[in-house]
Image (tube, rainbow over all chains, first blue to last red; front, side, top):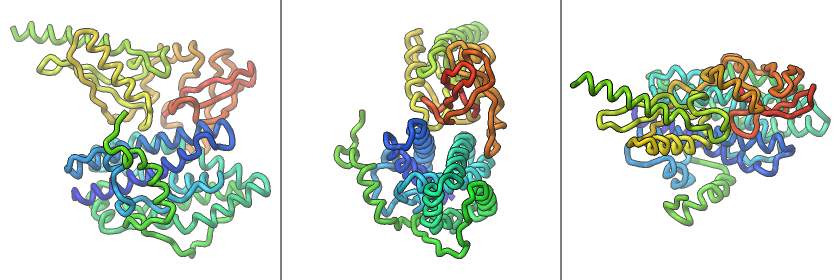
Length: 251
Length: 169
């Protein structure tokens, strides 16, 4: 079970680090001052959650790797994050929708993980779930404001729905790792969270006057196996630069 | 002899708690880390070392490290060998902020958290927050994310002053 738990923690930590990095790219560029505070605050939560997860992953792995080594010193194919979280920021609508999709998923995930038979994961979840509630609300409020806003903002939200829909399925994909952990009561089966996710997204979309995407869309996967989009390399070049240029540096 | 040792240890423990509990929060210096419930406990271990347990407010709170260092420094200055441990469980909640500390926050110009953490579960929850300056409840939320992870940004419609709200978690 140790191997499965390590794999799960790495997936989750990578999701949070990569999305945290993406969201942090808005710092200094957000459309309003309030958003320039909000987005880096959310990025901070995500990176904080990633730190707890990496630290625990390092302990479970038992090879002496710490959070920094796991975050900064792996190659692209070793990252296990969802394709959704590495999608480029695009316009504000794309960023908000990506955040809504992921936060609603994680809210459901953490709520289940609070009951995990693994004490450390349950403790991380108990903390993260409360932070995630704020992320969901932030993204939901913006989705509604933009979807039910001007013709321009509604068009941009609809474009974002079109662009990101194909990356949502990967969140709910089960495999041998998630099956084994669900069986042991350590982590929820992601497939079991789909109904709740659909319900919340439908509620927000209805209020935002947005059309739900076609349920038949082909779903792109591969992130969990380390097969990433071309943007991932550029993201890692930025993220890992200091540790690659000056290995082991601290300040 | 054993009884005396136990008394000595209890005295040391009380003295260590006092030293650590007096450390102000680096971002909200009107209250201490004990007021906020960030400092969970201070014990004296077998070797006579003071062991402080500290819990972060938010997973990514950048003040966590500063708080841990300040607590360790305060204990050393009080004459203890000291170490600080980070504890994650139970997760920090604004419910741990005492009545006195709430009053100190208000005087400082920060609206204290009004409700228990359970209230944040709703998707579009609105909280009635009173202005810390004039007391009016005619306030509007500008952003749920403010100058630090633990604060939201509000404006008073009565006295027109902007203010920070220590949000519930």
